[in-house]
Image (cartoon, rainbow, N blue to C red; front, side, top):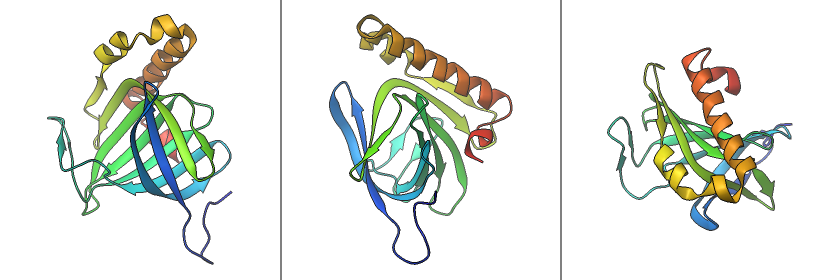
Length: 167
């Protein structure tokens, strides 16, 4: 089902990223689609100022088209510069997304994956934070699902490409 139509304004949701039981960040996003399994939204860079990772910079004007799943342990965010050039895809390993009452809530599980626009730079991120989080001891099932999700995205990025998820 399409989230918006040409008859009226696009719906807006609040994306809420939770980490360790606290809201890490929240921001408004345009709801693009919700087919009952995958939710897609578009939002401007919500961070303060520039975030330079060394291999990519997120900055004011960047546009994120974000895809969340109710049945998968990750989200995939297409990152474009203000001029439209694709920077790459930032993938968060999360618990499955929940959309209710105009709030799209996801719990960040520390693991991330970056894939450059040309697909040649695939980086697993924050594995040290994940190990230190204690999730393996508190919730071994969630920890195993998180690691499996990272492995799945990594293999997909190095193989057929993340576009196979987003088409």
